[in-house]
Amino acid sequence: MSRARKIAHQWLAADEAMGAEDVPIARRANTGVGGKEVGIKTPVVVRAESETQLSAIRRFETGRPVEIKRTAEPAIRAPRPEVVRVVPVPEAALPPVPPGAISEEPQLTRAEKSERLAALADEAHQVLAAYLSDVATRVVFGEGDPGAQLMFIGEGPGLEEDRTGRPFVGRAGQLLDKMIVAMGFTRERVYIGNICKLRAASWDDLAQRLKDRPPTAAEAAKGLPWLHQQIAIIQPRVIVTLGLPAIRYLVGVTENMGALRGHWHEYRGIAVMPTYHPAYLLRAYSPENRGKVWSDLQAVVKRLKELDGSSG
Ligand code: URA
Image (cartoon, rainbow, N blue to C red):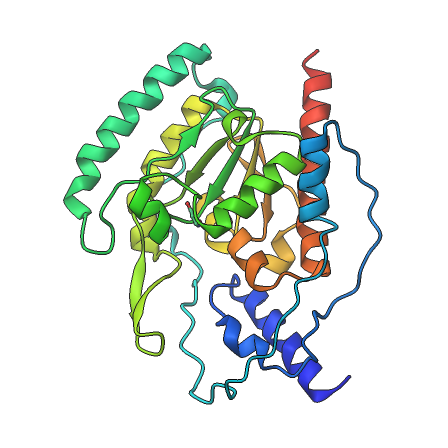
């Protein structure tokens, strides 16, 4: 393996170990990998139930490799900016997970769920208003079908989400939308939420701008009580967590993403599948990473079908 290729691989591995939080694209473009993506193309068999689903699958799963164009600019020589590491969460810092299985919570009709979520959102807006700042200007509560069987949980809103008050509407959100359609759903039929309801960002000296970052345990602790209540109301059958902070803060696991993804976890009796964050996928859009996410999502679809079958 050439040295440049080895370095590219090491970066990908480091991203993965840290929850894939921050790799400036310009640097990766200068890895000298010959302007081509690295990775192995694995053949995939896909089934689609509609033209829209088929084209989403094509774009997401079998889309042509991203061409990384070499720029005329010289390689960036400045030291790599510090990546915010998500350290194992001391349990005491986080609010406890409510006891008992979700199935023991009161069974609600769709209308009741909708009403309760609206009341909870009002309360969250009032309480969290105390923490609004120049960085987090809005509470981003979450959105989707109150009776959803499938729920996606990210780490917290970024710049676009803070501007609009809606979860996953930036570039990562657009990729998430494609993933959802490829699974045979639409954004309206699932529920999309976050651990944190407020944007977390810090000033980046190198980029000379505020950069979104993973939430700290203290920030997660502010958002989790709302998320626990959202899940208790929605009572999804399966949860997909996106990125390392989401699975760590929801379930309390401490392994890295490479070890966690592709395996089932549990939250109050609900099956939880962790997978890579779409923002990571955008930065490391290799056939290998897309294949891993697609296989996680297919496992979710299969599980939902099984649960459907078992409930008659
Ligand atoms: N990333 C997240 O984790 N959540 C969002 O809502 C947007 C980006």
